[in-house]
Image 1 (cartoon, one colour):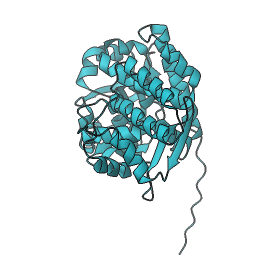
Image 2 (image 1 turned 45 degrees about the vertical axis):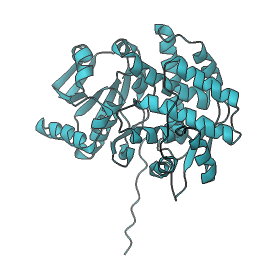
Image 3 (image 1 turned 45 degrees about the horizontal axis):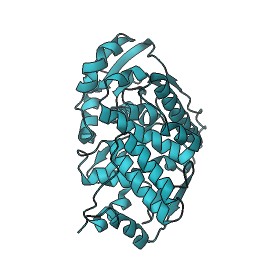
Image 4 (image 1 turned 30 degrees about the vertical axis):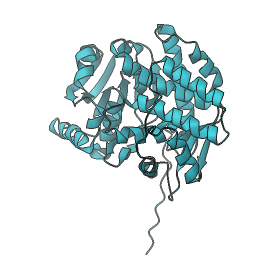
Length: 350
């Protein structure tokens, strides 16, 4: 028996990304703000002055990548049930990428999907994680392997929230900015080489250019069937680094910086990038105090972790590599020996 189903094409998803002072937001429904103790301590009072809702509740979850789990999502869901949210209710992600990913994933699950908005408070989440609708959690097999593509209704980026950001967290966000420039815009890369991101207007310009590039990519490929995969430059290697170190040694952006250096080494090996270009990228990352060195203890084990990457399929690893500065190439079926020889360059010296 065949029962045909013909779905009416859904309307295109549209939402605004506002880069400016946080406006006053009014909701004629129940709202739950999801945040962590660090962000709440610095900024929750400010946020609450900008929100009006029929009911407003705060859910505070532990701070850290190690809490980006299904258990934490279930805790957020339980809070939603306790407060009797309905399908017209709203979640607000108020924090960094971990908060945004988990809040968005929770919104996609609660009663099969309710609205949420992003108010990112870290540079990494402002320039990357809050834009594009990727949500999810980690598990023992790897990073973000459980999740959904679920777009927010709006994103509000207020650079003022970055004033309390520790220098290390700020640098982690710069890694994602460098990623965008290397992959898509050589002029932007040159801008960053001389940029003083401690100056407010220079920082806003960097955020704007990164967000515009991310939006341009997502508009073409929401669910990572093609060009959006390029945004994972540095992540294939970086996710293994995070997994090997238990998500406690490096911030996400720091692991991505290391991953970019590794990806560049592979690109040089394949003739896609010169050693001089790879050195310039390393110099830019180090200028913002990002780590660029990592010792691989077991090359074979590191290599096997690649197969848990979401971009890998049919037992084939897909690598996102730079083609010079400002260009990109998606490469797969690279000979295992070639990849392992590159990894050995990061191995322990004996």
